[in-house]
Image (cartoon, one colour):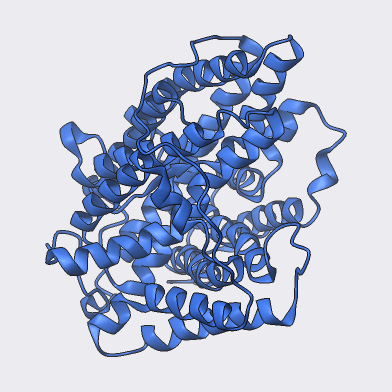
Length: 452
């Protein structure tokens, strides 16, 4: 890591910022991830007809994200990576969770029976990830720098679609692609770029919040943003363990368990990118310890999530982009992020306020942050000695992953379990990378080997 300049970070991993700058940095992480945390519950609730339970599902998603983020930063008893690893509801599980819910509904179950089965299989499936965290060292061949670099790149590239969709106005928007939406997104993106190049630490630290505030103000002045009255919500949302009951079915459990394996691979990639951006080693005992703690933290977060009525959590990749943009890698900021998310879960009205940020404004910020995640993956690949064999692995993995992303209907005629495993760029490309890296024999070193 000596190649990186320590001056690029305003606050290093173990630095303790004063409360005000720490809170400011935490708010930017929160704004970057808030929509990602609440979107999976919105999608699942709409698909499975859980409208009455939706406010509680959103509150618990935020509350559990706060608990998991706090654990990752604090690292008690080795649970957590000891870094800013914001935990959020995982998009990776959408297919498997919806399949479990539809299985319960097809059996004649109502909302409570649907959620009992979902949370039951997710609770037991979390032990798969906890077990994998204990054998990360033995899996190092499968999660080499080559495969993690590919996975991180695919994570960033696949997330870019979310950011560019928001710039257009959001999925299904009537005015999608309107010039006003594109102008707002461009304003936010350019503001972040310009402020991030400032030599003043405070300017860099505030780049995302300033850009979001400026974009929201511009949207309001142009008539593209009209604040809406807040919906009627309970003043306080308290967690209640297993409020919907507990159920189990093998047909629902197997896909969920397999997705926990995929989620572990994604988490390793995210943690490696986080180490890279936080100026920490990406090899050796310290790195391996962070991987073990981080994956264990994900598993424990998923246990807590299923217990309290939230869907599985994972380490969010977009917050690596925030670290890159702000130069704040202090794990103590992670404690603030966890506390803020927990508060949002307890007080749902606060979350309703943040939901009103216009989509194009949010998209302008997330687009550049997701691009930063992809750039982190490319940096890892650039540090790897890429011979012809490794180049072939990269080419095939990116081809499969990006091909699935470009043509999502490709697997519609395959069995459901195949669709659940390979219907995303990350899972398809990541599994391809691991399979080829394990299968193809390595070439003997030669003078033609490309050095990092």
